[in-house]
Image: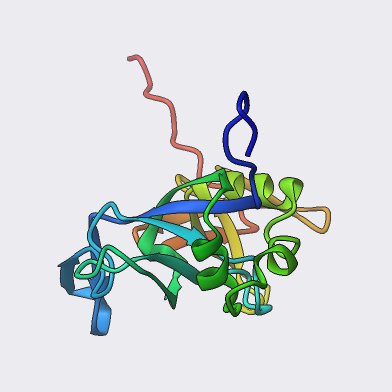
Length: 187
């Protein structure tokens, strides 16, 4: 720490807030305020990706809703988080919790926090709402993701697909163009 600059950053991390309402259970019909371990709106720090699942599940560290003194580390689904952004980490206790380090290993672990470009890219892409799209004539896996609301046309491998239907569960595209409505005749 210096007199003019304040505490020195240990690295960068992706930060988010727990959603106000989260859906659980079969079909997502059970609505809860926040999560069991984190209150709605709680700030959580996200560890760099550990699995190859596209970031659908993330490791987070934050202060438990009942014990605000200590950080806890847990795996949650990314869909329960909102408002992704990049912030500097100044707390050695947070680095230890996020990376499961022993006391005194903070300097070693800080090098394993987010790279600036990776963190910015994830924050931007995770803040963009997406939905799953089914494309007629293509396999369902891997899933195609489009922005929400979906574009009218989707271009894949040189073929143009047209939006045929969409609702809260996803979008459906067809290679057939939409029907043209006849113009009214003036008589």
